[in-house]
Length: 273
Length: 267
View 1 (cartoon, rainbow over the protein chains, first blue to last red):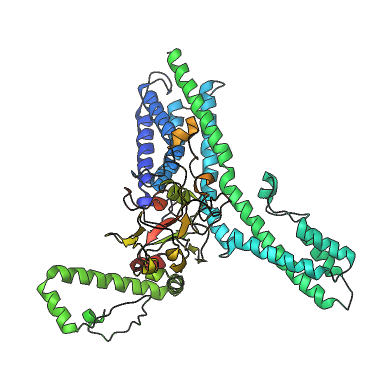
View 2 (cartoon, each protein chain N blue to C red):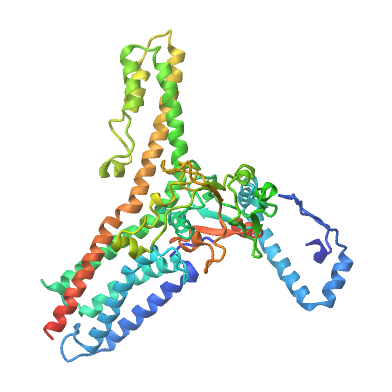
């Protein structure tokens, strides 16, 4: 039924990956080349070919994800294998390098690949953690429902604020018209707005002291507090949904960069062979 | 259970939809089982499974409230219901895009719309009811049930909208025929047609709705002939429901009511 990519098909792809890494490590330990272990030995070439194949296959995930009519396997198969095989590159590529690093195109490829893997780890964490937090934060409501409720509150606040003094009414008008949700990257990731006009208006209404309008103030205060709560949920929702995407802005470009570096690495190796 | 255990019947049953019931006597039932070893083995396996489920349900009384929620949403009268686990859903909308891509650019499900309970979400999508409300008043008799259970609308639909009005779950929409879709590389390299999951492709539903439930932009053509569209469970498409196949995290699953107990016990 519902099954996370980590445990998918009883950890099938974890088992395959562990087997692959186990065999590679065992061969590396048993292998004793004339020189130091490096990418030019028979084992080095074998591990290099495997690592390059895995890299190309992992990149193909972007195409497979958009092949909606593909009936071969479920996308979850690909995603689960993508996670585990991606992690296996840490071992395979490192053994392929023979732990030799320097200021050259080969190490550039290694660094780019590690950036892709580490960004992928963040992505995996966000994919496993954020959906639960989003569901918890929304409490069964959709974005549209929350926005509709805010619009209703704004309508009521507009009509009630007319009874108050000019300064407070202006603050409530600001709360209605100038409250912003979302925006630029940092604002989305912040999940809050320290200068939110709704909070300012709520504080101003709290400070009000005229006895005659206590009931109206109480009602406005209740609506502003409710709106603040809805805004907080909406901003938190945007923050969590941004986290689900932001890692891709590193993962995808660096994937393409590492593919380019892979081509350069292969060409260089054979050119100087 | 009582037929096999010789104990007084203890379960209370409430039908979720129109149901025919029959009365079985324990002696007759056992006589049939004695004559057929296969039937006996099958019934006894079911008996053990039910016992295990009962124990799990007793340990977790909250599982009962999940089933109660599902029944309240009317999914009890369905035969195949799309359920989304909110703890796994990454809101990528790949399910909607896959639905649109495999149905001429028209998505028949709205992932976000619909109620949720204990992180279980019932999106706006056809449940393929046992007694479909949509079938009850279709002038050209265009709505049918396929041998595998899926309820679908054939090309003789005249777009009268009766099925849309009769469906209590709002999963049928009237839509004009969408733009021609090209494959990924045709769009990527030659700019042909709308891209994968692009709104232009399915912005014509009901004049201003994007998909079942509707959350798209204005792009309708009021003069064009509309047809009723709904989930057909990807009838005729290899591999089964595209929405489930395209979910990268395993959040989307199609579940029949018989499996609600298992679903509730697993959560």
